Length: 167
Ligand SMILES: [Fe+2]
Ligand SMILES: [Fe+2]
Image (cartoon, helix red, strand yellow):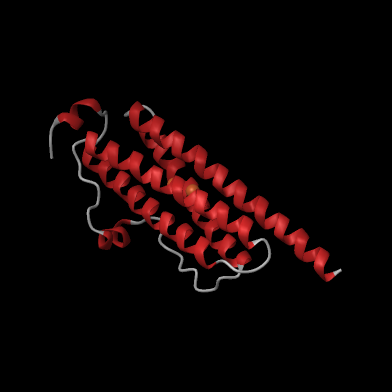
């Protein structure tokens, strides 16, 4: 580990690197959960849902990229083996074993709510200590909030569609 990062951050850099690597693991798992969800989703509105899931997947991967760059800037190493993702993840991975569109949406909504919680806590932690990380985390958090809203909106559309069909 270099000393470069230690001089520019007003907190324990190893602690910050651990938290950033947790978030990095979360992003890769979120990426895959969205990506595979988009492939297998079934039911009403599946095309609209699949394209939203695929868009979110792309954005989670971009979050992983932002986190990896910051980890390297701080003198750390982004987790370099996928096996490590499960050891470090905070939000985990929810296997989409049932492809029905409502269940896929519910799993991903839960994941976004976890991510929002993680990034809100991280934002508070780095607010005064590390403005560069703060800025990155704020950017990511804003997108996670949008993701959660987009999924909720799709779920509501789906509910009204399903209501119409039974009436
Ligand atoms: Fe993300
Ligand atoms: Fe997200």
